[in-house]
Length: 404
Ligand SMILES: Cc1cc2nc3c(=O)[nH]c(=O)nc-3n(C[C@H](O)[C@H](O)[C@H](O)COP(=O)(O)OP(=O)(O)OC[C@H]3O[C@@H](n4cnc5c(N)ncnc54)[C@H](O)[C@@H]3O)c2cc1C
Image 1: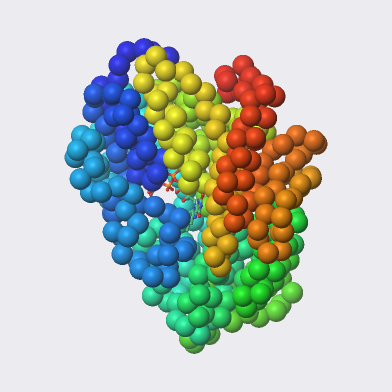
Image 2 (image 1 turned 30 degrees about the vertical axis):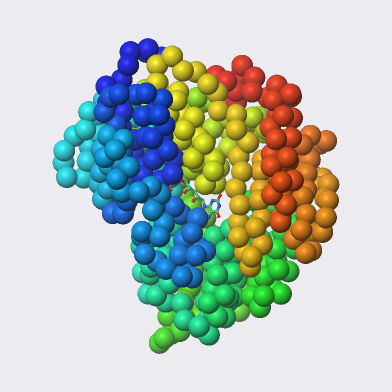
């Protein structure tokens, strides 16, 4: 890597990864030009409240702002909102208005877009949820007593189900697999979460695959793979997100599930980096590349990669990823990769969501989960981190980014 101090660092993406990277560059003493570019019209904001407080109480953008408006000028960061980057050359970005922005180093923090289903395209009152615009539209459609159909029982789908119940909606959830939250929780807990929703009046049906979605007058009608019909006034399609790799693809960067980076956040082009939800990075616990969709991970990864963008720094990212979900007042905290565990050692009660659980795979600690026990959760995170370091998992191999 060249050790010449870059003059201009461009960052594409005003999510938490991109904004944290910009602020970290200044904190680390970078005195050059920082341009932070995002295609969303709003100032940088937080996504986690979109399925929780903002859906229930207020869809005003100010409520979710990531930093005070004055921050960007104070930090001498050029913030370009409502600006799509349409092209990526080796030393310049092309912007939607036809202008060019030269850069020396570039961070792609482009996150992802909500996935939808072909059956849902073009239908009114059918939503996805990723942006502030999405939450305003969904909120406008949710009426107390009104039926909401949620397609997909992942974190976003279930959080919206819980919020919509609190708003008095009748909620039905359809999930194509046998249990909800398959990518997040170990099997024992998936069942408990499903029961939690049922106890709050959500009709949750698993092993149901959506075949069609049609409008009949004021009613949306979903048809599943067995021909069963499900009616609603509003539908949320919550079937995950697709990493936004358009620019990386154009530039010929290595892609897998997201943009492939090494332990320093470097892509296959040495002066281009990627961080946050879009980056597929070596994981110190699993010894393979993973792409993580968690707020704290995106923040910590953005900061770590920014440090490595500056000359003389070479610090591998080995933080234990962690996130949380809030449903019906239960705050579930998750670290590492507990969904991949084959053994769960639990202290406390899973059913009443007052527990801390250590997740093992083949005898190795690979993650932890806790509800209502923040102190235990912090201890679990420390333990998981210590185990991955003791195991020497950040080897020279992962360090070079040569893991699968
Ligand atoms: C509804 C919802 C609830 C969530 N709740 C939780 C939670 O409770 N706990 C938790 O841990 N995580 C939660 N998450 C996940 C968390 O919000 C994400 O992991 C995090 O926001 C990812 O940040 P990021 O900066 O990597 O990407 P993003 O936030 O996706 O930001 C990327 C930005 O780049 C922009 N962009 C992309 N391409 C271009 C381009 N060509 N030109 C200009 N701009 C571009 C995008 O429009 C976007 O603004 C939630 C996510 C959602 C959607």
